[in-house]
Amino acid sequence: MEVTYDELMRKLKALNDSVWERQTPRDRIEEWLSNFSNATTTERDRLQMLYLCSHFMYFGAKAMRELLRALYRDLFQYPIIRGIRKMNNDTLDENFIHQEFRKELSNSRFLGMGNPSESGCHLLYYFRQENRLPKRLFIHTHELTQRSPSTGVVRLRSPHVQRYIFIDDFCGSGNQAMRYSTDVLDVLKPLCSNGMIAYYALFATASGLKKVRMSSQFTDVQAIYVLDDSYKCLSDSSRCFDAAPENINRLEARRICEQYGAVLSPNEPFGYANGEMLLGFHHNTPDNTLPIFWFDEPNGCPWAPIFRRYPKNYGWSINETESI
Image (cartoon, rainbow, N blue to C red; front, side, top):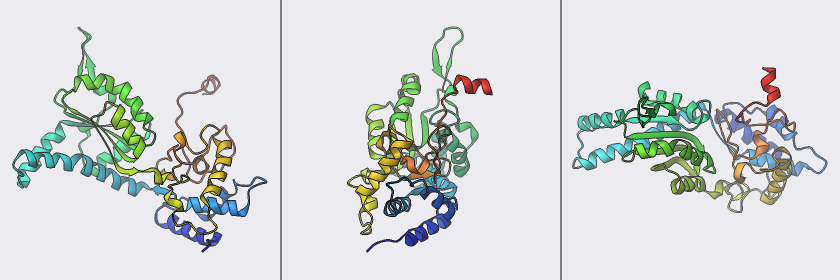
């Protein structure tokens, strides 16, 4: 069976109405499709792109809040409760378990991955709200340690804390977590040798998670959703094309994505570290996702994104600074 343009549009309308927070009405989809308009691009090519779009995984504000509750419950709260029960003859005394858990919680601190303006820290606000946690359990990285003014010795600012939980939205290649491990944990780890320093992500690729587990200084590395290679949408094992209609072809789709992606992002036409993701969030789209979905660089190739990415600006040029 073949799929038609109208059938895919109806599917996208249903996704837009139910999942995508009405961020992608038909006119926006058609505007995005109009990007694919060079002399060699056919209607069949555009159909391949529309099919890929119909497999895009978008997580809106409500879904992200639910995931943050799941992260706290499944990766933090439940393991501690299991430990409390195990250490106390598998007790079922709810009052005792609650009291012991509150002690463990008071000796924990939650931090966001990266700069305060980045997504890891952005999520902490909602994480605190959804899990009804006190503000004092959240700190900035500069609050981890303090230096004695007399001796210069660096110590933990709160020696009683036994768990440091770093929260992230997405672990793709694992490179950011690795950099953070070097920048922050080089100082923290020797001072907290008997404690837990955890990295918890909402989503992670299997390869990125393995890299962080094997090569970083985090003592516990987990994610709510782990994406294997089948989530690389253009790979041989891509789940997108398992039962594709007869007129949809993975190799054709790959050719088109590479052709346009090479113009938008010459060094990474399939996304950062060849991510080939079809993944976006309410607050941003990871650069591991195909650039054809998110590209919107002010000084780059003109392009109308459908799931815009807000790139990290690591600094201004001299001219930009002068103009402010």
